[in-house]
Length: 28
Image 1 (cartoon, rainbow, N blue to C red):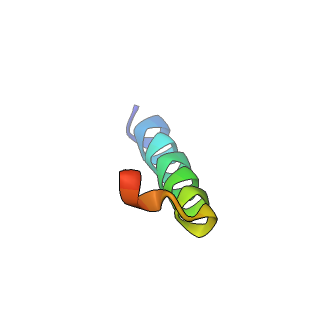
Image 2 (cartoon, rainbow, N blue to C red):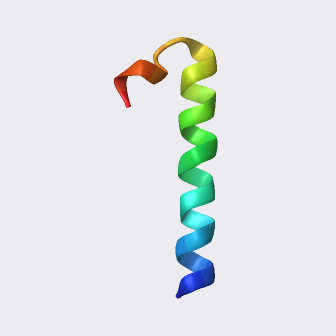
């Protein structure tokens, strides 16, 4: 479960990073 949770967290960070690069990361 720990590994799965960590992976999910990494995906979330990646999504937030992409969103920020697109210019609307301030919404998160």
